[in-house]
Image (tube, rainbow, N blue to C red; front, side, top):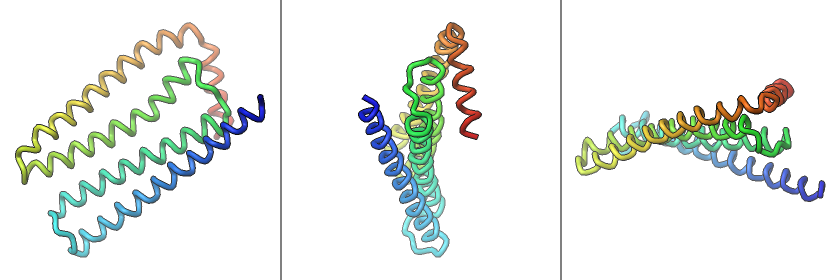
Length: 166
């Protein structure tokens, strides 16, 4: 059984590397697009192109954050997520970067809607999705804290593992 679980760690490590590679590729594309704005060889408005580059960078942050989380939780710690503390921390790490990435995409949509007003409804819907995600995340954290109070030892274990990674 230990060999089987070790295989999962290897697969998680491979997935983390692929996410990191995707993040780095997105960073290169964003840097290229930003440079094209600086040298003036891009057709769209400079502001829109920079905001789109920011959207790519936000997606890169998401990919790198996922890579880091998978590496820490599944490869280094070899932890199996079951305690409420772990679940909250694991999901919160993803949600913070995803909410930021979606908010940047909403900003990009708003800039595009300046030229095409029919896209304003799309931008408003994306901003609404950000608000709903934040509200849902808040409810999740609030409800999860109650469960954590039932298992204080899980919180102490998670904190001790954090110290081991530093």
